[in-house]
Length: 460
Image (cartoon, rainbow, N blue to C red; front, side, top):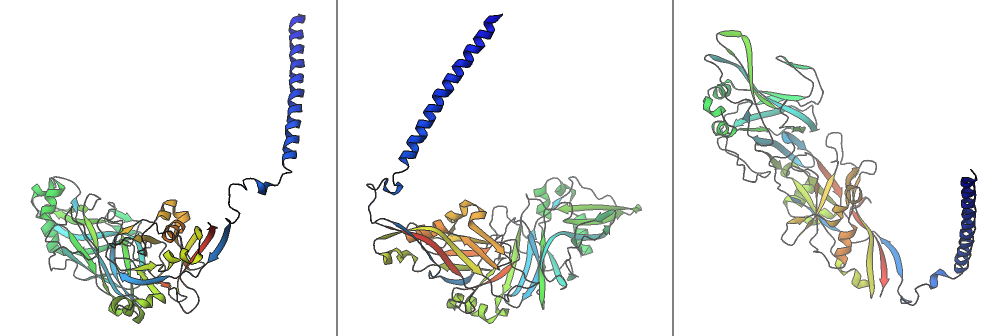
């Protein structure tokens, strides 16, 4: 009975002895560390670095910046939103937005019966957003395509496809609203905003008379019905552009309402819709001659030096801004034997005080990319650091947009990247209807475009 007790007591003695030894070692180590700390840290490694090689931090916002606006054309095929509407902007002039699209049938083997009678045909468009003045009446036109939209071809903001000259909508007027009203259509109650455009009876008859063999495959159907072009007139003042969710298959529909002559009391409906497998593209027309004198002179008359005062951005294949830093690659030469390390470089873009309004608001985000020698573009290295670092979002409080381009500027100074400038535009320009004005680097009222650089000089 005493054996286990004696073993435990022996173990406890061993533990206390080990603890005393560990404590002694810890105290000795601490004393040695304290003694060592009395040496001056600045002397460590002095024999490895030249005494004249020090790093000094500096800051400047006087880097020369040059910029001007230029017209842009962009690919608009199968983008996020189709755009529809007309705007009359006192700064940017007239804009008309429309789109071309294919449709597919909702069910194969469709047969309308032996005695179908057309009641109506309606093009219903799901309304995702509206930019501009929603109180302005819009006049919409719908034309049937006479040629196909190619699945292999690239379509741009200026592209077209041949159409019939017959307006299926007969100049239908509407005002876009985003209110979720309880709109009852037949047996459906719509809780999301839509635009409903009645089309001609002749077009409805055309759809009902398509041979039943066309309802076997989507491609066969598109040989009979190639699609529609939907566009709006220019407006006299303000106006708006609507963003259409074209592939929302529950709301964007081409709908046939009909009945059979033998049973007129039975209302029937058949519909067509658009999917991501179908082809569609946006088309935009701009008349900048109706814009402000400053814009006309800079954009149309070649007076690019006016961009130093004010520069312009518009989506929808409209306007971008080219920005360069002419003397930056020679900056290092002015420092003698100094070597520049860029700690941070920020491009700050302020808006003039009177440019934003309740009608034409600032875009939520801008994009900045680099130019190559052949005027093609590339993604800036700073962009890969993520949006929180790179920037580009509109700050409503300061009414500015800021980009952090430290790595790009650093490479530019060291001649490690091409110095062909930057291209500034509006994010999602192929499907967003925004516009904006920016003060240039020589703006008279103080808030100027500028490049702020924090850098260090390493003397060699």
